[in-house]
Amino acid sequence: MSLADLKSDLKIGLRGVLMGIAEVVPGVSGGTIAFITGIYHTLIEALSRFGVASFGYLKNPRAFAEYHHLRFLAALGIGMICGVLAFANLMRYLLIHHQPLVWAFFFGVIAMSVWVIGRQRRGINIATWGSVGLLLSILLLSLPAREGGLTLVHLYFGGAIAVCAWILPAISGSYVLLVLGMYETVIAAVADLEWSVLMVFAAGCVSGLLVFSKLLAWLFSVYEDYLLSLLSGFMLGSLARLWPWQAAEGSLWERIMLPVTFQQKVGADSQLLLVILIAGLGAGLLWLLSRIPRT
Image (tube, rainbow, N blue to C red):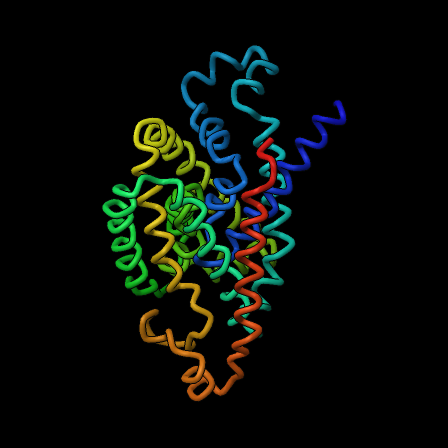
């Protein structure tokens, strides 16, 4: 392995760590990080190549690895696993004790993502498809979270659905899990290494990924500007989920409140200046990520 290859693997692995951290938080998509950091199209192409044609390469392991970009996927996958495992417990703690600051950071990240992705789209597509995406986001945010016990079947199909959200540069897989009533179960399983839960959930993710990646690769090859305009609007709407000052109960729209109201009703300091600073930090880091070399 050459030094250049090692540096490339480390850069991809770092992107994977950031994607893993993003997916722990409801409202933030790992696909957004992949798109901003310039590896999204390679990721979609690599995943979409798995299928019937893959069997023809099994006799030649090197050709199989090259055709499916296995080195790229391995570096990215290892980085994502490290990001999820390292931050699952931390994120659970922060969401309990410092929720406004967590939401503020990722509010800044997604707000800057909307700007970075949306400004490259055609104005007419942003006005039309972006509006559709915004409406769809509002409708999704209005869905009540599912309640009740989870079976292995729920975990499998929940993983298949959530991974479709993960791979899109707009929709948060964690938020989909939240809507499905699976978020706390999955995060606890990651933090506590409950392998039976994780294996079933992972199987669902792999199944959904293999099917959806092919459709997504086709959509990007034919309708990229339309799709990204739609997703930019969707991300804009998702900012409501990341509003820093939220009550603990009620629907999303009932929980959102102004800083002053938050102090009065929740009885906690709104930390207004710190929240603004943290949101700016998140936006600044995302902007820096969009500026780094894409190779």
